[in-house]
Image 1 (cartoon, rainbow, N blue to C red):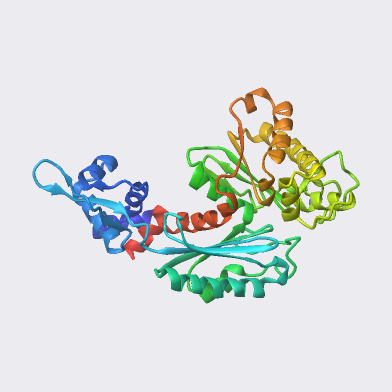
Image 2: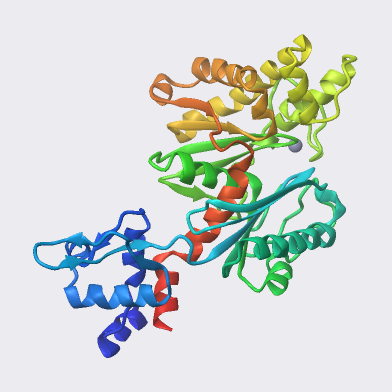
Length: 394
Ligand SMILES: [Zn+2]
């Protein structure tokens, strides 16, 4: 802070341009006069900061000049095309990558079946090659790479930590490995955190407290508290898949414990239950297809899984008091049956005050929540007022 203050006094510098950019990022064109009024800054200071943002192409003059009395006043608007962002959502069995603009609009995208257990060099190698192809298609200057992984990630280092379904990935330096090959900063988080970020940013930005539950091969949740992602001390917040559900003590989970939520209610668990009952199913995709075809047993199992998940979420609701719970992940495509089970238990088990205005719904972004969230993670980092100030003052 001291450095910034000294800078602005000694050189009349442009620090604070980042705050101005934050205002313009809402997409509305604004004139100098409007910005003076909004910020309370001197007109000369606003002009100086606008010049700095213009020279980095983060803003552009708006097409329509706004008339203010005599001469027309130029308005400025956020330039969402100033840079491009690379985003990757790596799941247990498939991967999706995209290049977006600075408003997280997807410009080019690929999706392939790619098991994460092939190991970091093969999976990330594919990612590098594919992103380079996409960047040729879109053009533009890459400002950062966001990656979601299907396991616990240490937030400070961006490295996976003992990920149960990712052999070979434990401690792998994903940011360095990708950064040296793509020439841009790399941010890594677990897949459900980026999904929560994407859903909140793109579809529910006004919601203060939100829980995003991913139900797929595993189960986890991402927590938005006061409009920010809550990661916890080590980045492990929201790992509800290994909360023990009392009804099913005999089922052993892949984490080694027994009776975990994930072991009884994930897509993989429902597939196992169907298999044991004589209905062939190999994973969440098969379960979703069976539910959609109206297979009675699959529908029953999906609904029961919804109840088990609702049981854990009822405690979360009492503890955290979110106003929205969003259900996403592969199994969300089994739609109303899962949601019905979740709703049934939450509304009967949580306290009335906590459920009074609680809404429980399916994801609006569908299977794109992760990719949008990975882009948002990078955009919020690159366009944070501090980061922008640093760039324009260097
Ligand atoms: Zn477990």
